[in-house]
Amino acid sequence: MSEKPAVSSAGLRRDMEILEILAGHGDDRDVDGFGVSWIAQRLCREKSQVSRALRALELEGMVERDPLTRRYRLGWRLFALAARTQQARLVQVAAPFLRRLTASFDEDAYLCVLRGHQVLTLMSVPSSRAYHRVWEGISVPVIMAAAGRSLLAEWDDQQVVTLLRATLPSGLDSAVGGEEKWLADLAHVRSSGYAVSEVELEDSSAGVTAPVRDHRGLITAAISVSVTRAASPVRLHEMGAVVARTARELSEVLGLPPGGVAFQRNGRAAWGSGASHGGSGRGGHPNGGADQPSGGAE
Image 1 (cartoon, rainbow, N blue to C red):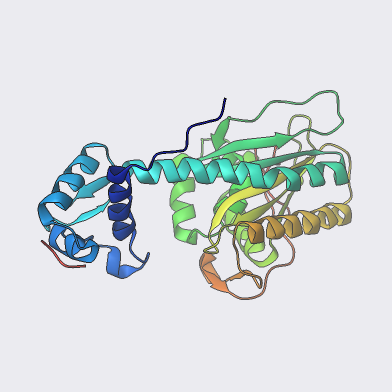
Image 2: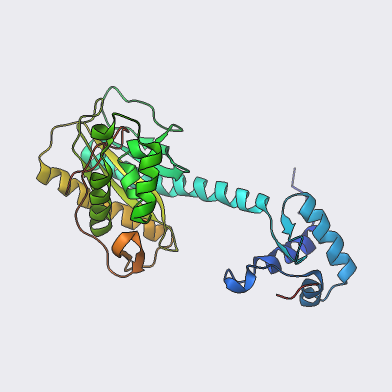
């Protein structure tokens, strides 16, 4: 049986036109939103019609109205949908890169993201080992994860110190690294593009992580490799260089312009050439422990 041709919905099309207007150009001109009259004028439609459509979209969370300026902006539900879509795409795009690392090292590889003050593992690709601890969907405190060094590399040093002082469990300073160790690790990540951990952690003896960037040059995730076999510092840093290169290739697929991003002092990112060697400390996640040097209103 042949499928019936899709029927275009005039109402949906009109709503989409409004959302596209509200999306603007993605710059400072769009921050305050747009008024009903201005939107209607841009779309060559009746103001009353646009006003009704905006109220309906507002009820669904697709747009929101500033109670003071009475201007409309895109709503929370659109951003929530976009975030879930971005995460799903990140996992899909990252899969072959993780598989390549696992095949190269025969070690487990992970894709991690920062959620608040937690490191969440989105995906893992297992090695040929018989035993694997399941980390997908599990979050751990960022201070306990080596991937945290990559994920927090854009933070200002004082922000990191404040986080450490607020969340560092008493007596665990030697396990996750104190303030000086953390700051040293971050400095290494910023200058290197990867971080190496050399701390005993469950079945892992070391770990290597590198940050992944989006089209804006912002860190959106981290790739990690859990090293279970004894490896010399030289070998770990060789692995680190490979992980960093893989993370950069993934970043470019996600839209990072060729040429990359270079860190400035205190984690500020600047467009420029990339990175070299990295980090030191201790941690508590399979991704390693800490890291060793290596318009108008209405």
